[in-house]
Length: 145
Length: 303
Picture 1: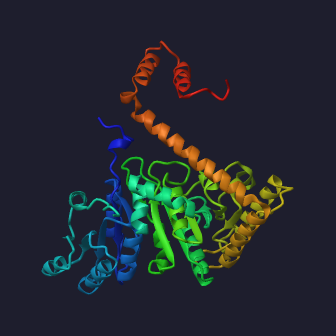
Picture 2 (picture 1 turned 60 degrees about the vertical axis):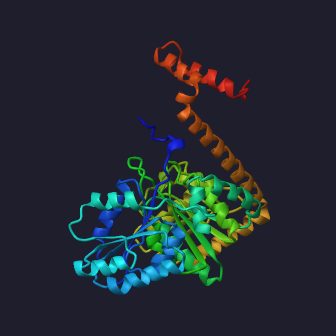
């Protein structure tokens, strides 16, 4: 049995940014996910609605998250995702795991993944599937030098 | 660089902590403003409104926003940033969310360290938004130069206002949501309570109305914050507070180190394990065990 505050063996929590890019006022899904990730032991920064690619990248940089989750239900993913990935690269954030969810048509998934999005979680995805994916793929906070 | 360094400090990575040791002599220049108050009083919205004003006055500012860590999962929802959306892309504003990571009292263990980092990075103003706190949770008073307590109408009567706790540590009190019914009453009650508590104080605690979401009263709040720094400097209180902050940070560090050693202790310290067993068998009282162990730490202040 491990003690809850066993400092020596403690793992630093993974930090995740959940963002809602663009003109999309529906964030119930994002909130359900934020809650599930909290319950899975992650530290989840939620940006709220109507974020520009620049705002998302800037938040990811300042918060130094290891994972970004983009939730989008507006259909504008092929416009916004390339801009977001560009803004992230521009800030040197190429080691961040980016995942996406919402209403992204199956036909678009290869193109979205081609941008560097690691996984796309469509409607009906089990929360545990998302949690497991992040657990397995989130990079450790990388050293400074 | 700064965000990654903050993560290393927060995670107590030795590389981050050593960097902080090197940077520490560069700190002490920033004005540290604590923003505290009950959940939902409007702390984050008020910080966002303050950021607008601070930026309009041409200054840069950093925000540390602390939200609670779940005692069940260890996870946290860090939602203070939502209110500060407008500032996301402003280079003159640095906003960092922190989870409390098991510390009670409104802050995280690493909050003081991150304040030093932002101070060393040259932010002239560092705003620290605490976890939503009620009557307890006054740790911010030993970190901040200026404590702003955010209240809202309808949170209690004149007896609440004279109880010990949060209000005692407020250098400035804001009644947010001042456009709501009961706001004038709340201000009157708070004023009366403060006048009872500090009838001869050289400085009267301002009690200011504000509506964070419209920005009403926020300019006056920033003026009150700036006036408080001038007062601190002129009265010599700044030195007193900085001394108190240093003392509190060092003592908290020692307590945490001891705490962790004790938690890991039962396996590493045979004396502790055997004393605990003897207490469990009723051969020794808990007080006797504590006394035996504290003697090992050195002479007591009473002896």
